[in-house]
Length: 270
Image (cartoon, rainbow, N blue to C red; front, side):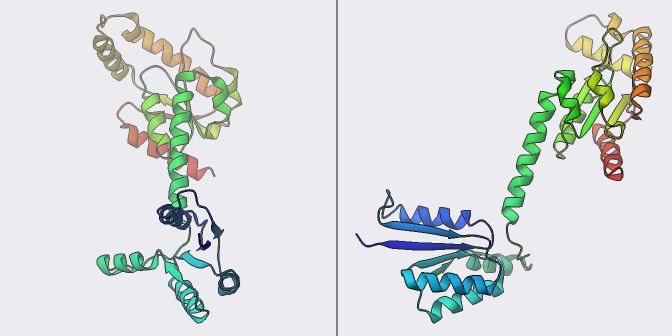
């Protein structure tokens, strides 16, 4: 069995090129016997290319490259041709095809796909965080959060937490009830990242009645009575005053509108 040596050269991590090479090699050698695949990541200049070409010539290797910058691709092709090294440009042809099809210039910026992946996983992490620390389940999350929301029941804390999580903010929220002392961690949170959500008695009365009916319960329960709501809001005011945080009136605001206010305040406080 003849030896096969492949150099995967990339201006990023080289993962894409390596996976393509492995997919091709497996069609001939599923166990990769007598095969060496060597990755050369983060190639930044022509000197790097020259050195790799020199090594490839010495070791009789094929060069497979994923370089996004046109000048570097050209230099790699010229260098390989000069030394009679076999090469494959994985990205160049498809980038050129897209360029002609849509009439736009490529960014030629290495690692963009991995930046997108990192952004995606950051979003997933934030969503999982919001679920874990929703509704005051674990007060320890308050000190780890980017944003902390406090408010009485039915002030859209959970949907707002999820919306902000999709914007990559780690959010924890705490329901305030007069009969239950807020967690001590709440008063250790930086007030600039804490937001109280307030709502009018009339609006909350309607929302809570609708909630009770949706659950098949009587809508005149104490939970929805104006006197109870006012008691809760009074308790809310005392807590947010102690925290020293911003208060947002969500009475006539959509979740997106409230989220934008919070994001703007967070960004301004950086």
